[in-house]
Image (cartoon, rainbow, N blue to C red; front, top):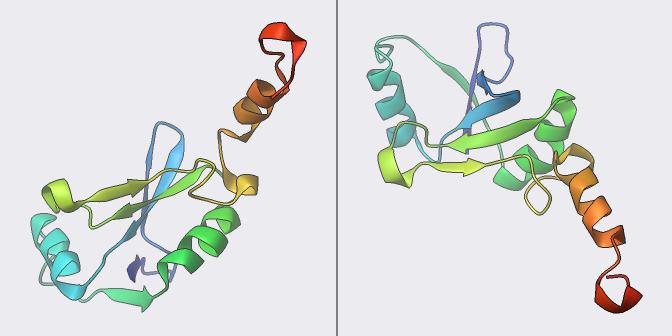
Length: 114
């Protein structure tokens, strides 16, 4: 994946509803289309090539706040969101971990636990 960088060398990100979203692109074409749509197609962009798994397993937890990935932003229905939830990001970075633990500890019919 291509991870655009800010002028400070940090991953380009946006914030929405308390979640930081890192922008990532599957290829140069998607990255260029996004830059053009922003009106920044003529500028030089720095980026880093990263494996998607490394982005989810290492970069997301390193943010230290709820963080997800937007893949191919601006590409219409091909765009994908990888939210900071269990099963997508490490449990230590998932925002739904506490809710899942409370559900699994709740008694079910007949007094049994899940």
